[in-house]
Length: 445
Picture 1: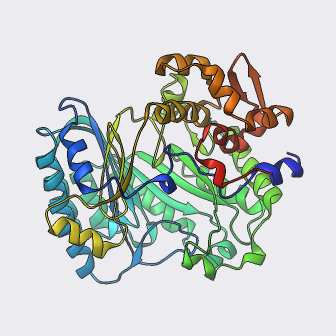
Picture 2: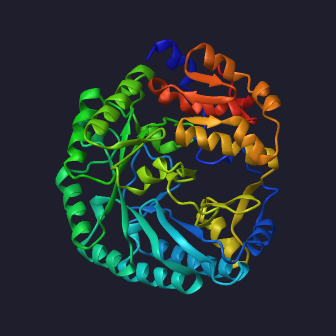
């Protein structure tokens, strides 16, 4: 890929478009009262997804951009769990009867910092408050460095059937530079243990763009991961924003690769995975042909949500825990990020919503176009406009960036049908940004 195109379009400030509008557009005008009203309006028979955020880790990785805190004590975790239990009951009371649940995701942080007995109690409460389908996907994120035999047995008993394992890189130099030292043996042992306990659906996370990373180290890490044959891999580019995430100030900026090196690393990882039989999913995911993501992509049903790519077709996501984002029929809601404020809201008997966004018809249209671009690398704009009751001509005419993208041969446009060229798939965020009406704060030069 040309360096000029990378410098022009690889803007680290561009959103990842997991949701639209994006979090910077959320407002405090959507608060606890709004959330209560939206919960009460949920259709009682429509399945929902649950996201539970656990904001604790036993060690802090310097690259991490998620709201987490370090704890070696059980006390803050138990305090958090007591409040989380209260939030679950509060949400269940607001919603119409026991909502059917098809997907649950425990994210973080490190959800497996929860003690085994406490995790079983949490799952028991969720099953009492919601109606889990027999085929529900229950997924959890795992740090192999602090994962015990007792915990894997607990996950099996609790019905967990998918695990997402943080790997990032197997290169020792890279690991030490980001405070994430994790051996291949540790990771392989956890994978084997999970499979022995019936948790056979395994995801890996890999990162590129980390300090001291090279194309060779990225390929070596990918091959090491492939030897464990995960069902899917998420391959993310490290986003260095030390002004926002103070922990990233520990990272040596002079050792970070430039845009061209990052693109070469991403392409090398992708080539390695595709050569090994994985299907490329959207911007940054890879899955075996029989994985749900690959099947959803093949059927044209791949979705994008706050966790990334998903085969989950639920229209509603209920977020639980500090900073968790929910997607309800009328719009988005996000909980307080600070655990102290989160506790105060729930203890006062109200949702912990700190901000959100009420969707307009035009927001829904733009979100649909952006989702198809991010998922399929193409979008039939006139067809999507027709489904939403809009004229495509004014919309296409207002998307000023499209002309520039077409001139630079990043996209093909024919009668409103937009297709991102395969060799430029890593620039799909810049294409999606053409339909982001709130993006005037991020000019592309």
